[in-house]
Length: 406
Image (cartoon, rainbow, N blue to C red; front, top):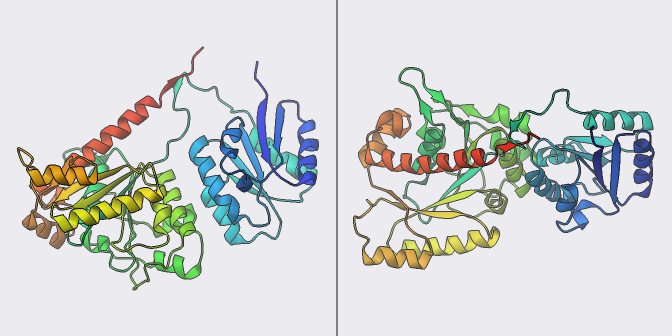
């Protein structure tokens, strides 16, 4: 016997709630829970309440932008399969609709609407699946992992790491025709001096520039058209082909880029700029792992410590790993190494040796290190970082398999 499907509604509009109750009353297999406040007014408490619902509904309010943060938090918690419906005024701007959709709203329903039309949309989103659920399944679609690359000073090879880590995370195998186990997107957020396109010998696009100039929140379609596919299968969002101020993006746009990409790709690798910009907290908040490059000189360690403190203030649970650049892992750690680990409160697990010849060969040929100098010590070091991340995602996916048999 099938149980009733539960709808959870957040609205301070009594007329909307009454209309929805009238609609649900005509349907025998639906239950409705109403919370008489906007989601943005509930300071995060809407998320655990919404988890009880098969379909989540909310009123967008007079200022829909205020709901976007709540929707993102909700979508991260409930996963990709559960429907989230927004009721909004008919004169809602296209930009606001795109913002809500990019944040994770399944459909924006204009209100007021005829009861018959409202009933049809409710039926659409509450329809029982046509096929039985398999005995062994993933409970919800997993969002891709976001890996951000930053550096304590210039010249440490952040772009080299970002490009080659993204390439290696595809986990290509096969002697003749390379098959890829994972879909990977690489984002060059260094709006002024980004060099990812040059490293891969692809033409930069104006997508990020047009995005910033048009003040538009990108959706999945926009990003699909903006991505450039490299011959290796890597998808790249290049830095603008026109000089662009670092603050040209706003936090909502940066967040929408990451949210849409991690919904489509297994890994999203972000090459961050040296400077700080107002949109960066939105990216850091969505980062699963940050790789912070540093050397072991005193000035660089001090700068790395400042960045660790800054980034963790923005995201308390941010997982930051230090990558020691331009040094070979010593057999026995020297005193200044252990002192640097103590200052940064993080062990040095990753070491990338200086390999100027391999870097030059790869850059001049427009190929990743694995293709141009796969046996180099630098390529092997980046390969080790990638293998660790792949191992983690495999473990996560294995843990996500649940037995639903009775």
